[in-house]
Amino acid sequence: MADPPRLSVRDARVTYRGRGGRPVRALDGVSFDVAPGETLGIVGESGCGKSSLAKMMVGLVRGGEGEVRFDGARIDNQDAAAWKTLRRRIQYVFQDPLGALDPRMPVLAQVREPLDIHDLGAARERRARAAALLESVGVGPHLHDSAPVEISGGQRQRVVLARALVLEPEVLLCDEPVSALDVSIQAQILGLLAELRDAFGLTMLFISHDLAVIRHVSHRVAVLYLGRVVEIGDVDDIFARPAHPYTRALLDAAPRIGRRGPRLRLEGETPSPEARPTGCAFAGRCPAARPRCVEQDPALTARADGRAVACYFPHVIDEAAA
Image 1 (spheres, helix red, strand yellow):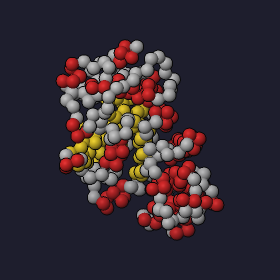
Image 2 (tube, helix red, strand yellow):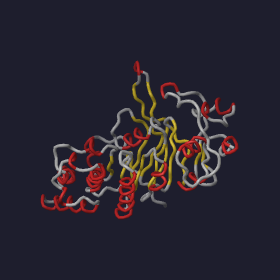
Image 3 (cartoon, one colour):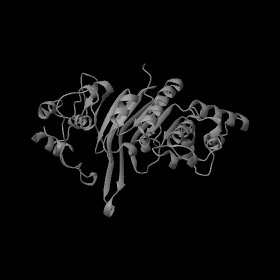
């Protein structure tokens, strides 16, 4: 029997309250699996549900529905005590390292703190473990007593990574961890993440709006639009020939990443999640939309090439762009 996925999400939904108390569905029936040691990239425009998905998976948002399983065991229905144990195995890396760190504590103490909370080892062992991990991510002893505001953005992100890894988790959920950094520091952090993933055997969910970053770190990629997955599959296959028109539009909006030919430019705005249209939510912006697209929402359907696409006419957009 094959091993279960390290992470499994089924029909995940997150609803917030909008203006006048109206429901706003940020996440609307998302399902996927992540294999042990795999990195799944999550990409989409702002407001598509990326962060809501990651936070729902670790119990950081209320009102979530659906199932989240870790090594086959359901975790979305756990209480606070159970989550304390689970968070030794699943760690979250937030987008803003300065906001994620305590401004009053020196960095070494912050990396050691998870060991203190879980009472792991003697005090001297905790300090040594924290110092060794900081060294492994490139934060030397001369910075150990510094406050977060006294070090650079890249160094803060390294501290956040060290704190996430000090409990030796099996899963990292990374929510835009390099978006606030300049390109040279981004490259250093991404290289470091790849090294740490291989060294620790980490399974990763990596959220980003930056397609170049997603391609660099991910084995597979899931594309979200208005709270739903519209395409998921091998990252190289999707970047080489996107099947969903929204995926194609995202790639064409970015600097060219190994693709040539005419660009697809979208018109109009993303529909409001407070008033999701009938049929395919992308139909109003899609140059290749047909009457069927407006009438009925396409299901996410597996294809022979190993990816799944929620589109009645995949690849037709190549002709529309031309």
